Image (cartoon, rainbow, N blue to C red):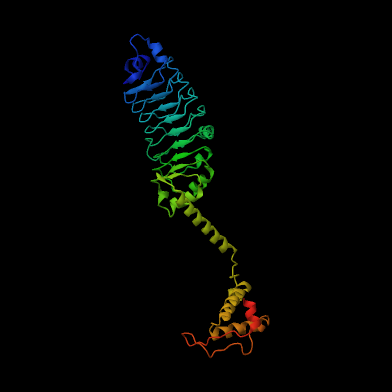
Length: 345
């Protein structure tokens, strides 16, 4: 068990930043900007007022149970606390300049207590050792305070089943949420339309990754994504998928605009739109001089009974069936009336 104190720092600081022989402890501490005390068996932190110039503290791979006594670190920008025994985020109110916070591999259940860190751009809180059945929870107040500053967030391996709470993070550029319990692909698609600055997204090793066209659907909904699940999105692939999306949307529009022939009566063969298109198709074949006589006579019979609108199209001797036959020995007709031929051009 080791407590991080001023004497420990003065005696054990490694590297080129060692204390000079003729230098006082207080003067030495006052000029330190980096504190590399990772993997030292440290279980607590003492208050070290002289260390006011510290910008980076390395305390990962220790056995810290609590974040405490950082009221001296008003200039701190980077704090590395991975792989300790932390259970709660606290006592960071005195670090207003904090920009990067590394918390992976602890036992933190709630992302909280960061509402005073108004310059915090990156948070790494992946793979927390949570009780069985529990998931990482986000305090709304903290998220709201970080909504206009946070750019990078890693929440992988925290049993998350939804990311909707993160929708307020308007400046988010990189999100890593792999190895969770995310199933709702539609929810993620909606979030991508909100995160207008997102460039890198990793949601691999989630149940939704097995859904059809998972990658394609995410790419087409976000024009800012550059990397998805560790794979770069090329301009060619994006252009192809956007064309595919436009084609699908056009097809959907056409299907929606197509009239419903079945009005409940079951008599869609007499529907006006249907009959007009069938007549156009029939007459188009008649124009080419290749149409089975039996079908033409049937169409002509129906048209005559309805109206005389097209009676001029067929002359009494309009159809000559003496020339060619189809494979079923049905007579083939040839359109003879010049006026109707002009009509079809």
